[in-house]
Length: 100
Image (cartoon, rainbow, N blue to C red):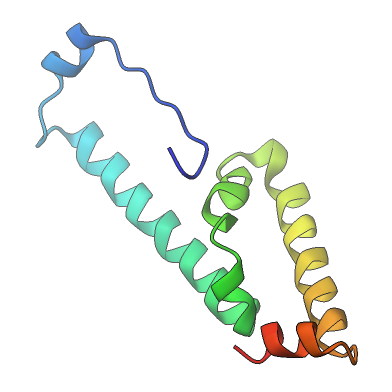
């Protein structure tokens, strides 16, 4: 898909999974929480750059694993810092993008 995730689920496991099972309800709750976290990080921390960062939900997927969470957050902080530095430049193109 657009975020770079490809999921293959064996048909027999899919048929055996009930939508009201505790595991499915728990995973749905986690997915909603992580989606809300990603949305908050991008909209609150990245400011006006949200219009040009539709790849962030996929990029921030690294937050879901302990072994990649710190690295992912550092990369996000670097991106935000670079964005704010770019907005300080005098280029009309950058000023136009930053003003969105």
